[in-house]
Image 1 (cartoon, rainbow, N blue to C red):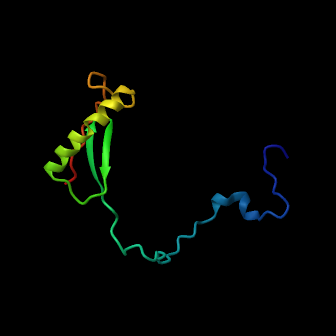
Image 2: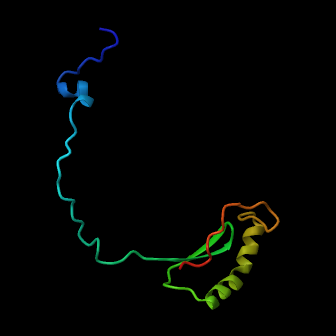
Length: 105
């Protein structure tokens, strides 16, 4: 018959109207993942050098002196990336989204 799906040989009849049956909503306790709470997730600190360049460091905190040293040391890298066209130059249109904080609380 045209327009009706035919049941394949051996296919369960319940598949013809699978949406008509009730979903099993019985409760079962969640599976316990071994080692899940053994350690806290690692936090990283991010330093935004330009609107399109951020450095992530796996350290617990950064001081003002750290930020100044990173900015100074990164200046040649930023200039090279701009020269190569890998990041926007200071006069180019840049992302207008709100700037993220330079330092995590």
